Length: 313
Image (cartoon, rainbow, N blue to C red; front, side):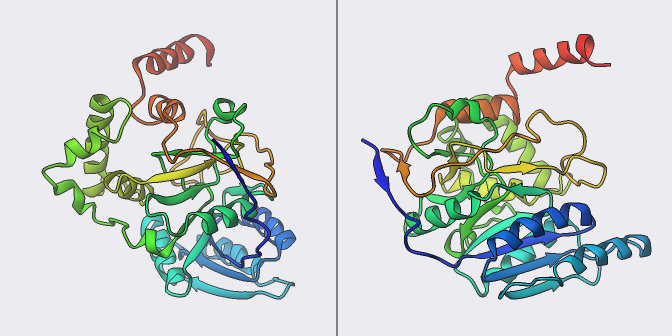
């Protein structure tokens, strides 16, 4: 039986951490959304320039957050040198969590719906003591699956970093070096966690070993692995609350046309949130994520080949 919970009545002042870099056109869009929200606490982190040409445009991005006009405790962590996306994200989150118990986190290419912030506030408050929930996704990668759900949100095995929120207590489990891969029981752990255990386990063992050897430079896969090994879950809103706009040549991990980019956003009723009856992952959604984005089913791969051959120039 679902429960109705109103988690918005008590106002919380969760700090927002924003990562900016060399895309002032994106940064200004995020800033305008924050200007409407007027958060009481902001953390702004930025990587340093790779060269002198880039330094000018990075300074342009940083200058946008020098124009905060509302009452706000703003703190800045700007690198003098370029340390790379993975180290910048991880060090920025570590920095903010020295002061905060929970954070809402945005990168400059993740445009939030206004309901994203109160939704995160509500979920952070409700699940603070639930160790099985480690992260709150703002992005629903396929909202058509959950379109007719009565519940406001559901649970997934997959973390998504396109606008998200978490707690210091959860982030403390972050396995930055992927040391858990050395566990001889890892195959069993992964198989017991996934809906398609054999294909999925093989895929993630390969992919995560590539990450550990730095052939894939991803902090997000390391966070995903942290959820896997702890058999933890992410919260996903019924409607998509984040639109990733960063698919141009300046993007590190989202270059080109990805079928799950630029998903339309729509609001949710954050004043009367309907909770799922049980804390259990949505297998239909997770199967779609795995089959369409990660290890990919044979059917998806075949359709992709057909589209490439017959329907794309």
